[in-house]
Image 1 (cartoon, rainbow, N blue to C red):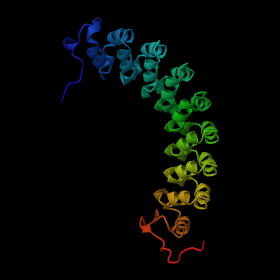
Image 2 (cartoon, rainbow, N blue to C red):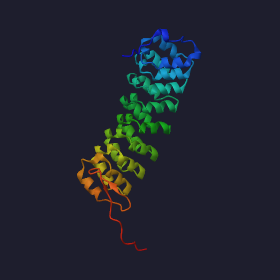
Image 3 (tube, helix red, strand yellow):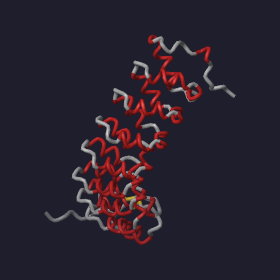
Image 4 (cartoon, rainbow, N blue to C red):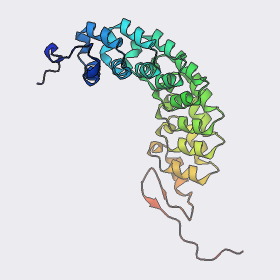
Length: 268
């Protein structure tokens, strides 16, 4: 078995700024926690890339002093790396601090971070963020499942692309009310994204509504979704709902069903 422990004899002088490549390698080493004194030096290093890799290293989980220092780093690049570190879940106060970071890059990274999933109040706060990129990142994140209030706010947002991102997120399976709300969306692309999402299976009402959607493309997308396999009545209704110009694939049989071609030209 390969020994992954740090060999002190192979580590260059931490004050040697010309060896930034080695410092980055050290900052991201999984065994760095064995050398807390090196961790402190790396957190003070002038190279942003060194601090970036240190902030992303799970080994810092046992060092609250390092995490606190990196959370107030002068460079948003470093703080965003920390925000994306899953081990930050053990430091809810730091997560809350980063959720109010002046940089939208940091808040976006936090919205996507697993560390946020255990803090519904942070998810709800991020759903109200003034930056569109942050709200979109949250709409695509598994963390959205932590807050019904946050999810509903995004589901009723003004921006169709944001609602579409949410409708495509499998995590909304934990938010049935959000699924129902999206099934009523006024935008075709949002309803179609939801019809494709396996999360649709969580709510019979949403499935029924989409199966009767005014858009043929939404109904056909739903018909191809294997997640509705436990709804035979819906599958049966959708299997007979064919567009002569478009073959459909039903979730139950996964076979193409094509309507017979029109043999008589329409009257003009």
